[in-house]
Length: 131
Image 1 (spheres, rainbow, N blue to C red):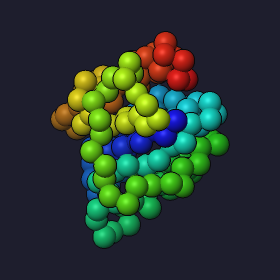
Image 2 (cartoon, helix red, strand yellow):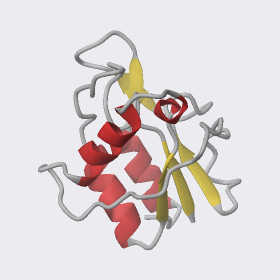
Image 3 (cartoon, helix red, strand yellow):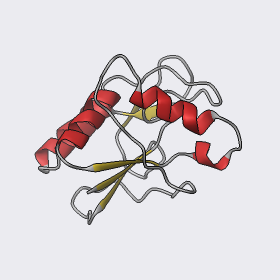
Image 4 (cartoon, rainbow, N blue to C red):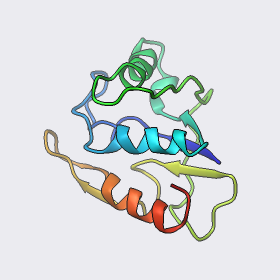
């Protein structure tokens, strides 16, 4: 399965152009997705800007000391709007993105706003046999 993964509000809290605080459990679950054989593709608005923020996001993920062994090299050419979070109706693509309708969210700790709830995501992915 292709997993289209957002960055700000999903892997880290919103703090563009800086890298926000790490969203707990995000990198560990991304690693599990890769180990299960899924292709993880970075799908973020950072690709739309002509600055170094996209490469900084990739470097943050791939070189993070919290979890080793993650390697995301694929990225979308433009931000693809995520489909509704519904694990009963997925085909070959899954979008983990804080703007995906119905995706589980929690309050961010450092900034005002919401971000993906990776604990609930992991539970749902496990229940559906995706993880």
